[in-house]
Length: 342
Ligand SMILES: [Cu+2]
Image (cartoon, rainbow, N blue to C red; front, top):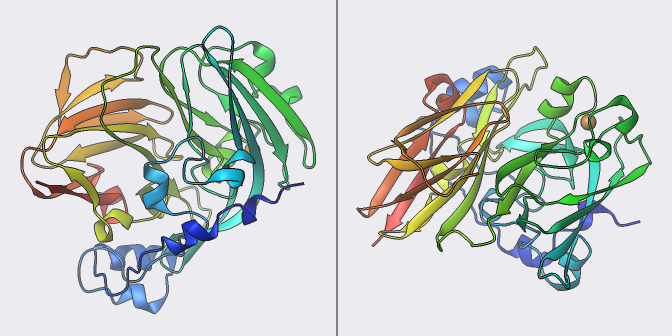
């Protein structure tokens, strides 16, 4: 049986960027709440000091990867296969594993996660409307788990009822058509649900319309948070798990190019999360199920499980902050930068 923890290639490890010497924000509040090492507690500027290990989960790669596009050749083939069908659609087959694994959510801050394929969020899956999704799910974890998808499917594929639970060591084949087009998600639906989601068993499921959206610089942002002391309240917030990662490593975009963000809220315990972009506005396509929108804003609020596609263009070169507009979340890690290049 394949071992998910060994799946990341040397190529990916070679892409690790040193974050040494980065100063940043809210190190003090993060450190005081999670009991982080001294090097964080003495942060004198905004952000965190130091870097996380990006060998298994690299937030910069995760941001712009789907269908295991961060892997190459045979390694990718082991987790994802595309087979064209006679009717013009595609059969997309995935290998997903539930695995218990400790993840690093800020430099030196570890969280005992339950993961899909060793990472939180799980791999982003992407299909075109009408495609067939087939997922071979193996539970290598220590608790019963499922994969519950949002989207149309038959009840037996819902991964939500007690009889749908996949026991440790067992496996299950999920199969359904990718519909409707839009921005969806998947998550474990074993009970207690709150615990299984919070522990890290969730990911993004994008279904493109048959007539694709116009070309854009695309990225996936999952708003999430971690209760590091298990008191039912989060201590660390982020997009894509690692607190303040994009303060140290701004997301590079080009002036005048359309930027499309697939934004999903999977924050547990807090009823809402939000996305605010400085000095700009963006179009909002809620759930991504329509191609037109009337909504233009600079701050979007989403309940847990809600998602939206955001589109904008950077008019000016330079750095643009984005963060949750709940200040507490921002200070505890949910803050980053775009850097627009002319
Ligand atoms: Cu679970």
